[in-house]
Image (tube, rainbow, N blue to C red; front, side):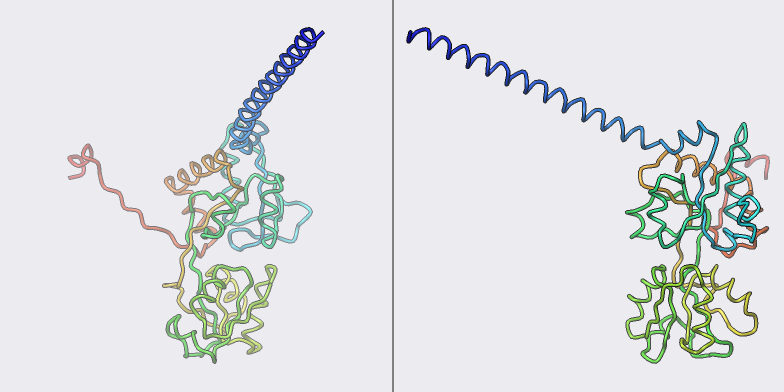
Length: 310
């Protein structure tokens, strides 16, 4: 009986080890397959926006008001009639150049909820002059810049001669009106610690900044060049704009999408480069009188052309 008991116990131990070994092997196989599947999924997701756009021949494009890059007209029931501007022309041109032509679905986004809109999956990218900054670099992917924007120009009441340089604003007696969340607001917090900063959420209503100036609640409004130019045109003869030729900050501006979308970014970068080279962006710039800045490009003749040009 004792020997039989030992044999039974040994068999049980053998089968237990066998089951555990098989179980361990199955876990290893599952982990390997799961890892490969996860890697494959990320690789596929990396180009999912462009693949979908190419397959459906449709670009889902987010937009928000920022004249003259995006102008929203009164006919909101028909986005194709309501929208115009520099960036609208860029996207329409890109779609029209495909063979066959692609469709553009225009989807409104909010600047206050831009991250949520971009990551919602409803849009492929946002077509506007979106500023590239260090904090935003962790959140979004950007195309190459199609323009540069001057930031930190000052709106003052006409005839105010107190401010020659940006550093003149760093004074406790100076009140500056600023929009919450804007690039210049963070810059002013760092560079103008002595000034009285009047910071407010404006939700795209840039005229609120102008009202602070006219009502003398503020001595200065700091903003970017496109906003300053629009306010100046809407209220001629009442204000002046300082440092248009030499703004305190210059930022790159391009289209934006969520992280990891290399396919659509590569596609848009190629389109932007082509439009730069063939003069299409110059046409849009003249058409919309865009207040951006552009790098000067200089070409030299290749050795194969020198003899012909001399």
